[in-house]
Image 1 (cartoon, helix red, strand yellow):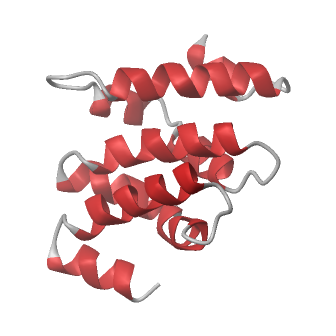
Image 2 (cartoon, helix red, strand yellow):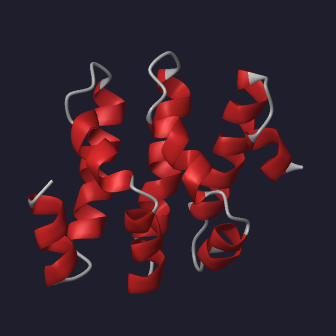
Image 3 (cartoon, one colour):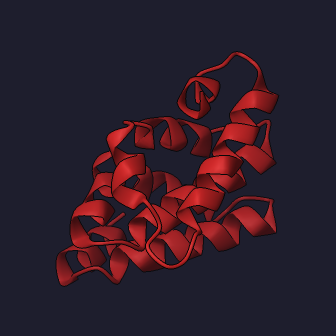
Length: 124
């Protein structure tokens, strides 16, 4: 149901589902990052990053992706391959301070994964 709600036409359902995933990914210890990745929803979160009319949805999606990118190198790579990095870079100019801050966290997690990831972030 959480996955279905991400694809709902109702923005409120999208937001609530994204928040549920973010809370799940914030769980300590051992957040279920692989299980979330296996649902195939990373590209949907990346779509939500592009949302310009709902800063809360944008923020929650950024936070969920930040948590995924805080995992293993393979997990971080999933976020990179979904095209999130250039969008996070553009979000550094967001008018929403919390969105900016989340973009910084995400880019830091990605860049901190390896020299290759760091260089990729710096070249965006």
